Length: 108
Image: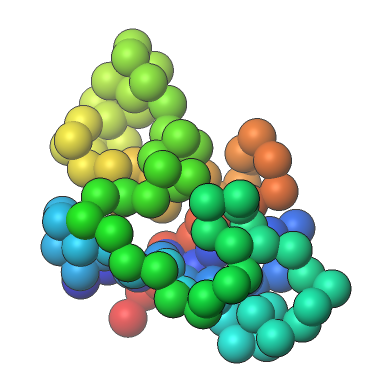
C-alpha cells in the first residue's frame, strides 16, 4: 500500500491511497472537508462525500501525468515502471504542476 498527500494551493486537502493497482481511495482531510470556504480539488471529486473509491487511478490524478515520449523519458530517468501511474504521479507532481494541486508521497 502506498499513500500520497494531496495539497491544493499548499493546504492539505486529502490523502490518496493505492491499496493495489486495482484499488484506489481518495479521502478528503476532515478539516478541509468541513471548511465550506474550501473548494473541491476537482469537479470529479466533489465535496459531497468524504471518501471516494476506484478500480483505476482517478481520472483527475491520471490526467496530471505526462504522456507518450515524455512519460517514457520520465520513467527511464526516475527508474519507475512506465505502467506505474501512482509512482509516476508522486514523483512528478510534487512541485510544478498545471493548476493548484500537488501530490507528495507519505513515508510510513
